[in-house]
Length: 93
Image (tube, rainbow, N blue to C red; front, top):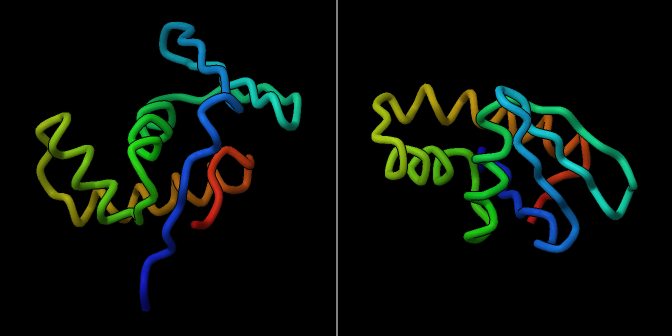
């Protein structure tokens, strides 16, 4: 079964403001503010580079943060992508 590919919201749709360990993400389209923790802002930033699935996103994170265990990371990222989609911050490509 192929992984779902997601794309980021348009660059002008979200305003991300770091607040220490949390980040506030204001979605201009829905007028909602979401409080999230890492790696949610990092996922959104990496998806801005182009649509991808959890495996490709794990590769992008591994390149940026020198991570091991990309398979385990991909499984966790698939869950985070689903959460971001439910919030309306990413959508299937």
